[in-house]
Structures are given as structure tokens and as C-alpha cells.
Picture (cartoon, one colour):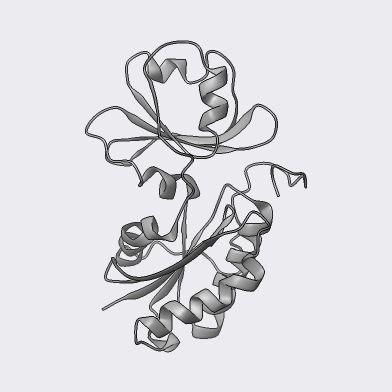
Length: 225
């Protein structure tokens, strides 16, 4: 039996969930534009463990969103995850923020394109197929009228995330683009199955060397905190 604590802090949402063998059993999350992760995260961890009627020593692993995303949020989440893993002597699992976001869409064909708003006309993006297999690796993408054209010529592209409005306004190349009806943010709820599959395959991070995937050098401004 495996209990995995999942931490998602890459955006304005501070989200913590507890899973048992890949099934969600408790979740606490709050969306705060002021990034109150440092005050919310540890109380959320205590709450989900208490709600689940287990002790912290029964945890099998900690999973954390590795980015891309907010520098501030990622730094807080990763520090908490590494600290817990070290003190409990359990493994650390990292999960791509863009994969977490992609899991909010279910399609039978086409491609899923999670986009997180970055500075100016940029987004952080990746592309996944209908089975959530990586088709295009994570990268910063400067959006223009022909962005993702080599993928959209033969596939419907399903956009999700905080960068989709920017993509809707700037991409003009064809009509094979489908946008989610709201700017959904990543949640630890979608980490449940991903972290469990990584756990059973022993896909763990090195505690001493693991760092978030910022994708770009840190610049503190009103968009990329």
C-alpha cells in the first residue's frame, strides 16, 4: 500500500493532495493572486494527512510539480518536498506542470497543448498525444501567427492553460485550434495517477541535486514571479 503526498505550487494555486495506490483520498487547495504558498502549504499538508486518518510516517513518497511556472511557487513547493523526503527518508518524485495541466483534457484523437503564460508574447508549452505521451518537449515558445503550424496542419490542437488567450489572439494560421472554455490552472488532483506510476517504476529524483525546471533565467516581474 502506498500513500503519496502530491504538491502543486507552480501557479497562484497552492494545492496539496494525498493518494492511496493512485486514488485521490484528500485534497486542499486555494487560489491566491498574492502567492500565499509559504503560509498555506504546510497547513494544507497537515490537513490532508489528518483528514486521511494516517500519520506522516506512513507516507511512501512525496511528489512535486517541477515546473515550468512561477519561480516563487516552485521554489517553495520543491523546498517543502525535499525537506519532507529528507526527514522521512522517502523518495522524491517530480511531475511536469504541463503534463499535470494536460491531464485535465481527455481526447480520443488530436494533440493536447498546455500553455502557461510567460512574459510578453511567450508561453511555456509542450505537446502531448491523446495518451499523454510527449510529442514536443517543454520549452519557452514565442507566439506568432504561425506558431505550432507544423502540428496543426494534420491534427486538431486542444489548448489549455493560462497562455491560451495569448495564443488565441496571435495564432492565425488555420482553424484546427480548439481552446478550453476557461483558463484552468494546474492542480495536485491530476498528479494522482502520474505520481503512482512513477512510484511503482521507481522513477525518483536525486534529493541532493534536484531543481525545478524553470526553463528560463529568473526575472522577477508582474507576470513571471
